[in-house]
Amino acid sequence: MASAPRADARAAAAVAVSQVCNQGMSLAAALPDLRKAIADQDRAFAQACVFGTLRFHGALTGALQRFLRKPLRQREHLVENLLLIGLFQIYFLRTPAHVAVNETVRACETLGKTWAKNLVNGVLRNATRNKLADDLSHSAKNHPPWFVSQIQNDHPDRWRSILSANLRPGPMTVRVNRGLGNREAYQETLHKQGIGATRCRFAEDGLRLQAPIGVEKLPGFTAGSCYVQDEAAQLACELLEVMPGNRVLDCCAAPGGKTTHILERHKSDDVTLIALDRSSARLAELEANLQRLKHQCDHHTANAAADLDWWDTQGFDRILLDAPCSASGIVRRYPDILHNRQPRDVVELQAQQRQILSNVWQLLNGGGRLLYATCSVFNAENDDTIAAFLGTHADADIAPISALWGEPTRFGRQILPGAGEMDGFYYAALVKHGA
Image (cartoon, rainbow, N blue to C red):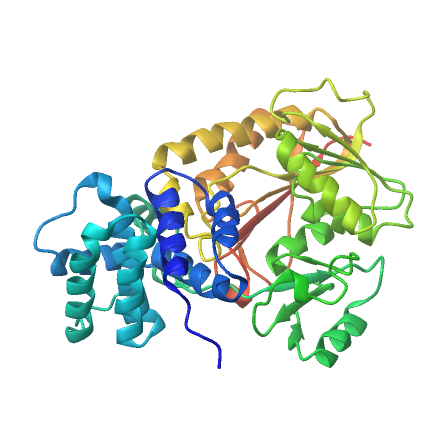
């Protein structure tokens, strides 16, 4: 029988939550240190504690305040987050009470907070004896007020379901590399290894796993057989409508999910693709994915909002703009978004989106197609951005998107979080006047 996760797993989880909530770090940056700090067999538990505590942070904080006689000092955020992780174990993971209490108390020593052992012991024992009547999974409690207001304003009939979906982890979905195989054969390979998967309804290369697993357990992952990518993101390649001989620009490409999908779908179509990203570190991720998936394309570190130094003056027939955004549609996968985003970020991102659109539009050939995409559910970053662009570019028209997925908007199509088991995504297609 496997042993219960140890105290150091809880200590490492408390550090990761503090890095996100108190230091403004992203989960992507915090998780590598978490994984290094603990034994392999404890990683799944520690990550569940981190993700769950961040998802239900608002309600757990409210519960903690009831059990504390006086607030903790601000500098003791490690202890506070350790207590939240303890409460998460008791109320959500259903960890046996004595294990949750004893191992979380022991984690105080690992964190160098031995003074807090009695406090942690008292709070958690009190929590095990007092089941709160309130619903800790109440969606509005676990989102910042500004986020709730924005969703209510943009989606007055659907805001409750959006917030509720944000609290449920999204499924693990993979895209089969059709350059190396096909979906049916890979599904059978998964089945033979005891990994259940169903075919995505809308993405032709997608398989949705019945339960998430480590990528190292995916057959052929290292050799490039598949790429982990939500079904909503896989729709971009089809919507771009790349034709044989097209010259294509992916102008915010890293880490390369959509870039590699285009190359897989059009490997024999004599398509030329150039990928850009402003971050050299993220471009390195794209390079790694190109290599793993057995693809090649020109790629440059460049700011698509302003930089044209990389451009060889040849126009493009297709442009994919997966714009920088608030990521408000993928909170269920990255609950740190609720802690690190602020209203001012949306305003700044909208300005950036408009600037990139205007800059790359001049590179599009007459008759060409630009696909604008975000993983946001905020109108400010979606229809409002497209409306502002159309108001200043008379040579642009909307190409209607007819699909069975998502919901029509004024200019594009919106997928709401959880709809069809997909992430929240927005797409709008623009065509340029001329031959």
